Image 1 (cartoon, rainbow, N blue to C red):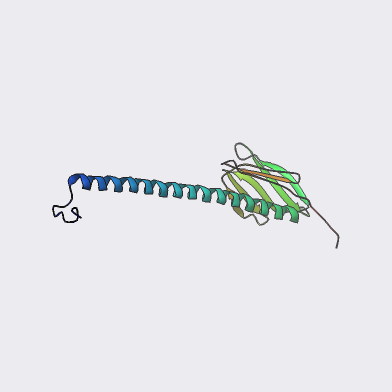
Image 2 (cartoon, helix red, strand yellow):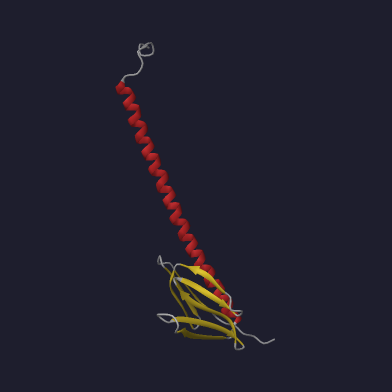
Length: 151
């Protein structure tokens, strides 16, 4: 009770102790928030990359199943030559795919180009298998079985 009746105020030592405690709590809080934000950004990027790989696989699989022919060609106008994967139906192009500047580019039958995946380091279509590997090491592979029937 004697402390409550003291009218002299706070000492310099008490004020400094409070400031130090608040500084420590603030630093810990900021560190925790920064760490959580960084982890959330990394997880978001990882999920987006996986989503891009999945989308590219779905798009290529869809075109592959529409086609009745598959050829591999090279574009010699680029250095190094770019590998082109052409999907055809009755000798007409369905779509052509290529890897250029770490992007998978799809060229439609009308000649329109669209990028379907970013940050890709490897891309290959071989027979009925599709392999895609992203720059950060994520990979996706699928095997395609073509079932043709008569009407």
